[in-house]
Length: 404
Image 1: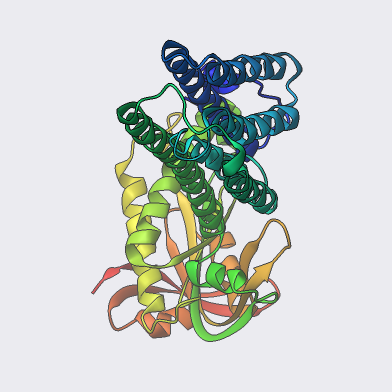
Image 2: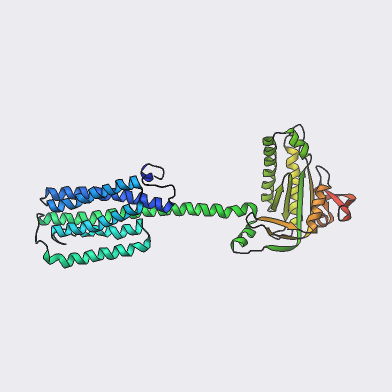
């Protein structure tokens, strides 16, 4: 319906979705009223009421002219106003021509579509004015009743039939218009919900769920201290030569494949990916959800990463190898940025974890004492002596070899 020619009648590029819906609904309603006017006019003409027949036929003709002007000029307000005025006045005039409420089978009830249409096609604040106009015409019809003709050419059984037709047609058209209106609104709400879900899911792609919820609640500054957490850094060895050997597309495909697998492992183990910068991959455990086994979780992750790398085929004639470093200790975590949020961690423990990676050995998992003390009972760690760590001096290190 949205992409059909019918839905594009009178459409303008600047129209909002609400205006487009109103136009579609009004156009479809207008054609129903035009058809009803023709039928009623023919019926009154056949029953010997030419004046009464001229009114609905005139309505259909003027309404059709109004529609054609709308198609050509695209003046929606003028079209809408003309349709509301026509459906308000013509049934009232028809009732006067036939001799009042009883003789006309309450044909003025058609005018009720005017305030209903104002609710559907115009701004809600305008609808009460049209309702008052409709009620005024109802009252005026009653006041004029004594001055109208006493009878017409419609026998009593035909008057009853027109009662049924008038009430049934108005009720049916009102029901159709309301059902279409509700359907369009429901579709708009469904699309709005989808858009909202997409917008709410975006922060979850870059922020932990707990942190995203706090941002949604209005927390402007998020900064948390964790007295015990673990940090892992992994870096692809020989990345620069590899970029020279592979095409850009091949390089991106390799990184995407590797880091997608790493992401899956991160999710399986319930730890938190912090970021990917180039060929560097950073993960944390114990934040923003504190857990006692944060060091063990990252140790398991590191071994799973190495196992995956060992199982995949070579790239450009060489096997992919990562340096992996882990450290544990106190850290600060928080969100930085205003438009492009970024969850990050800081502290001496983070710096040491970075040094464990940058000064590590390809294919090995190098851990500092902070992590070793937490995992030594469950994991096999081979001592590697002491190394000079930039900014920290001499530090003892271990290679994580496996599970005891």
